[in-house]
Length: 386
Image (cartoon, rainbow, N blue to C red; front, top):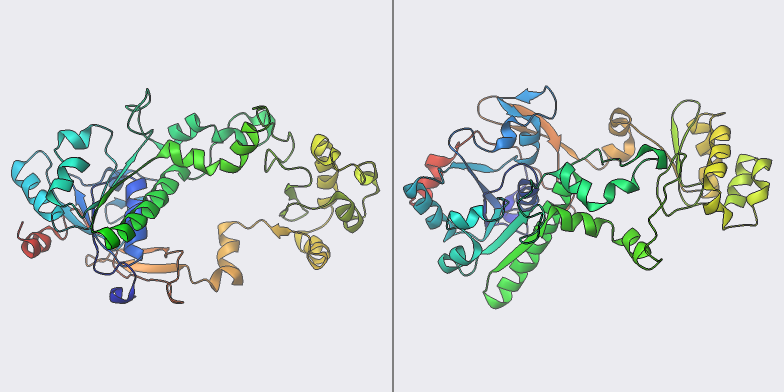
């Protein structure tokens, strides 16, 4: 287990009033950097994601997703409809460094815990708000859920082949990006606080981070007559990139090939049928479907390892497409030491991931699993006199 006192955020107190993924992902990143995170949960069931099952797997009565994103945090049960509990929470916030909340716009204000109210209690507090679509406009009260935010952001039209229609990411990418963006804003605000002594209100939304995710392709769109991108009809991997960019089935698996000049690839693959495109770089985009179909037919004739033996020594950007089992058996993954086991006093054991950051050459590691609802309530109330 990492010595928290050696981590950059050691000594900081984070109060996490958020649920599901975006806010808890933000506080997870801060926890991995050494902050103490107290998760505020309803006494009757806690965070809704405790029961939001990704699959039919649950551990210790909670979903695997809850365990993954709330490891090593503390849980304080607070009834936000109880005046005494609200008073206790305000007392705790007066001692806190960071507050994270992702209530639907308007809810936190009705609780009397909006930024203006809380900053009067604690002017040094860095207060982070994550919403679905910002604080104004016609979408404000729509559910701020990942799939719905993806649907409204335009990002689905970058995935899959042209004939497939919109294809969502296979991950809650908006939630994770919003949590990461909020953490970045919090850290910047903490730096400013160290200089001026003044707190800040950091705000982001699922829609904003998905727009930012697309900054590269949207810049092309905005400066190219606002033409909509057209994905490749065949093995599309990027709407704006020419052949051979894509993933191709080999005899025993899949091979990804990134940006590569067609003449060089044609020579290495021994493909005379690519001769018409050799000296016409524009055709690598305009005729990308035809080119990729020819490449796919050739790649299918050999195994992935046979092709890698030819392409990698020639400095072609390519890789075998790994599934999770193959990834975890690879030396490239093992050397990163990205997995850990966390435990709880009731015997719950969780195998999960570790922080993607290393501090002074060391990746933080924590042995405590996600808490039961209100598990640390009594200890926290005694410590802070709540």
